[in-house]
Length: 384
Image 1 (cartoon, rainbow, N blue to C red):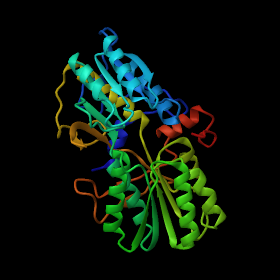
Image 2: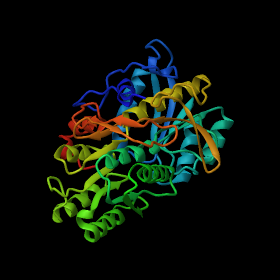
Image 3: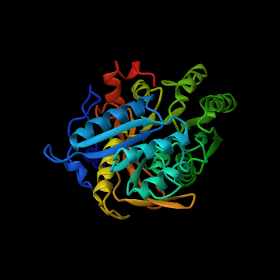
């Protein structure tokens, strides 16, 4: 699979502005990407998110508003539930009562949407879950990047440069599908592709302080024998980089410890450009917004989709099972960002996944982190 070609057809962003120009459907499985036409009736799509106060979700909301215009969608919301699952269920009931024909939701947890799903189903409204799998009933589609590829891509980069010593895996919350998928893929891939490396597995529950402390302990204990750190999200980078610099293991050092993280936020783009972070998986806010709305329109129109059909962000739609519930998903192929474009190949990939990829150069202006950074004073001036 040509990962670069897939991403090029799926993403369309202009540097310097957060709002996107209209983007062609590029082989959409659904009907919305072609646009509804200015003369046709708008489709009402509800939106319920947990937060919008991070760079990622702020970018997502802006992309969603632009794509809604392109697709002739009337957005109801976004409503914000924070960490209150009960509030989110009530908000979704409100959106149904306000006439939403489908609802895009970022669930508070995988198991928290049961009452909302039951209420929406009783009123013939379907939900599209963004960034989180669902284990509490049936949704029309899960729009979420392939976290298995996140772990495998980090492994492909590290294993191409490290054959011995120690590599630290700062694991996310292993009770979440995102953390579990990244961890399982990374660990299995490293065992198969770099058997001479000892992986230090540290569960963090997405806690920044825990991750930085774990990294500090490993740096002090192993010194130059520590070859790489994989942080499964971006926030710990800001604490880890000074620790590496203090020990002479940072950028420019002959004993430089590779630092790979996940998110694609503006400060990661800045750090990759400076060489203090070596790579990052860019969780694609633009593709999340585009395909969530595309599938929401499909759901409103009664389009029937099935596993094996062409995906929008992935080669094919797939069923995903989590805690006993199975839902259809489009596991988006996210860009893996390095300072310069480079091919990465694995001798042993995860079953059903590609054996390599070509990374995306950090200078690529279409990366959402660069778009957002350019709109907020530059990537090195954007702190979240």
